[in-house]
Amino acid sequence: MKNEKILTCDVSKKCGGCQYQGTPYQEQLKTKQKNVEKLLKGFGKVEPVAGMENPYYYRNKVHAVFGRERNGKIISGTYQANTHKIVNIDNCLIEDQKSGEIIRTIRDLLKSFKIKTYDEDTRYGLLRHVLVRRGFVSGQIMVVLVLSCPILPSKNNFVKALRKVHPEITTVVLNVNDKKTNMILGDRDIVLYGKGYIEDTLCGCTFRISPRSFYQVNPVQTEVLYGKAIEYAELSGKEKVIDAYCGIGTIGLIASKKAKEVIGVELNPNAIRDAKINAKQNNITNVQFYQADAGEFMVSLARQGVSADVVFMDPPRAGSDEAFLSSVVKLAPEKVVYVSCNPETLARDLKYLTGHGYQVKKMQPVDMFCFTQHVECVTLLQKSNRKCKPDSYVKLSLDMEDYYRIKDAEGDVKIE
Ligand code: SAH
Image (cartoon, rainbow, N blue to C red; front, side):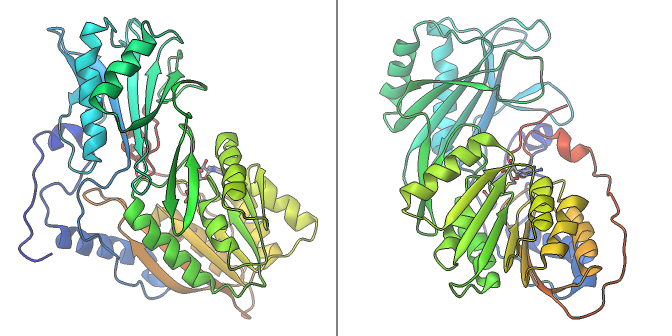
């Protein structure tokens, strides 16, 4: 990207989601490389970060919180950093543009449908958030309207009016969130239009994504990331593979084509339901998915004396835990491929694994979150013959600021 034209955002200071707003992309990559190296260089060589050709408008999941200004004007966007004040956003430089348009259309429709936005303080009003997810390959679009109660007046006409402007919307879901909570989505979904989920294609497999399942937010870089993870595993077709923290089964299903069998484990029941359907739809029969805490599940596998050749692990930002890591050591797979969205917790977990008979072979950062400070990293660990050095697991206290932001790297949805 020579002579890069830098697009600028008017609200970046207030929003705070893009820490590298205004910084040339190549410079962002250099900074990320430096930061990752600082944390990981003790484990070996860090490959140069894989960046994007076009670092703008990459997010396939767009969230907007709705509210009103004092003068009554309806606004939608994000929370101002560390507050519950809403910053109105009309053009976010990292979010899918079509999804942004849909959110603005919803904002414009509210008045004529007499739909009130929800007020967190008084707990009065109906529309809290809108979430739009778009399958970049399939073109399918899901709109999730998060309401404080299950009744949307004139819901059919509302959907009709929305689809008149955006016929490309393939499904509309009403999600009920009636709690005083910092989570965006509540636990009830009512399908108003279409199938209630979208599908998308990654690395030759098709995936169903429902409103509450995790799906990587940068589809272009996800293929780079998964490609690296599969390459690192060097599967020959004979291996028994574990895909831990598997979400909707993406890594395990892609790996299954080159492995003997795959076991996937994930905590979120919605994601596991999607994963099982995804296996069927892709005619994959050598994968089993289990809904469980990954740590507890691995402990029980280790107790049963199960063996594995390769363990893929892709935990959330908080990283893994001692139950999980100590069971990995007991199962003693030849390779562990660790996909991490937080180099700090990765460093902590690598310290444990390298202290218990594993050696870091390769580390590849991938820029999944351009303009933000976050960076993803794939690490290959191999069982070594060195004697294990006993090393206790150190719990790292994460910077709570990370949990504070609504635009978390994982698209996580917590706010304090
Ligand atoms: N590998 C998947 C998902 C990665 S995100 C992908 O690439 O899409 C991390 C996943 O870990 C999320 O789906 C989250 O629901 C799950 N998770 C979080 N804590 C967990 C735990 N204790 N046990 C199992 N899964 C967990």
